Image (cartoon, rainbow over all chains, first blue to last red; front, side, top):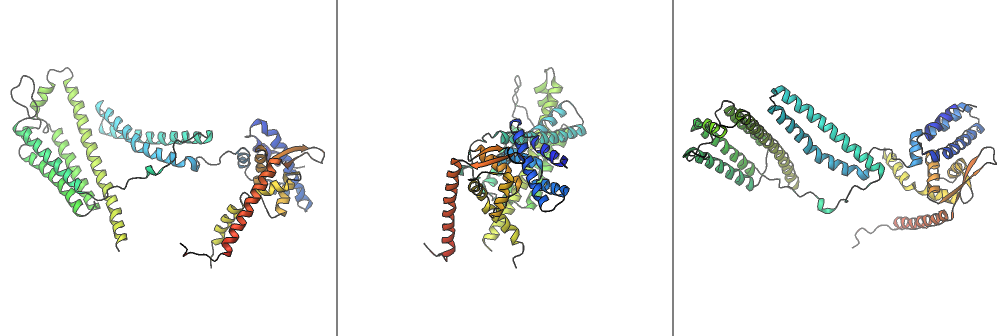
Length: 328
Length: 119
């Protein structure tokens, strides 16, 4: 009797079953397979073909075993998929960015070269993302297998609020107020001075004196262009790709202007620097770290401004499409 | 004319038939039967089922108390015989009643020409 295939099939099926059911399933499967083969032999099939056909019809032994034990044949079922996806999206929006920012900051402070900083940041970003996806998924797979609850069910309060898609008047006002405050601050800094150091009669300026008047005028110009962008977006009833491009260019001009000035020691009043950091033990080191934090904040803020412009442009396009559909 | 429809209609048919196998098993096993014999009987009665669906289903129904089983070692080879328990019979009655309700409901849909303008 050619029993080897059947034996192998039954072994493959029962191997992953709980020990207490293995013997019973094995005996029952042996009988069922033998019955099926016998019925085929009665119809004149040759033994080898009959056995092969019966076993093939039973299908993948692992699937059969899973069916015996009610084990799921998927990684993550519909009951947990949405909870997994929501949590993953939330964490992916936060964790890799924080990890990359933190590593970049530390690398810069310990004096790594630009190449090292970028390389480290990218590799940490990829590693953090991979770990995040892997561990979150693994936890959900384990939760599904243990049958635990995923917390409160969905309810109506979780419906997303409709986002204001138009670039509203509020945007224009906010950016005008910001520009006004910045200009007022620069003028106040120039003519009255912001910082009063102990033991000095006169208030000290924060910005470098040589910036006055042309560089300051340039900065004022850039601020006004920002207000202009918001106004155009408002007039066109939403951001467009063109505006997002202009916004990107503007943000890059800002970053390069500020970094160039800072790099050449032309941004901050040297008198202030010497006053603030004089007499402190690690003065040069402190200055350097403060400078790095400042540069990274400027880069971060500009990057966010650029991304925000593109997100608004996308939403604006969607909204204009909806408008067009509604009023053909 | 509607090529490609059969692929979808097959799925719908399968979904409609899912669950009827349980009722058929409970009814057929009022007289004791073993795996392969039940497979043949199901097919004869128009409930063609795959072996790899039926065998685990029988163990599940036994675990849930709707079937009881006993090994019979008198035949040529030892076979596990299943028989519908009292609880299994009650379940079969419930399922049958529900099936009849459904039949009436479906008949009412078929007979009614439809009143879309109602209300």
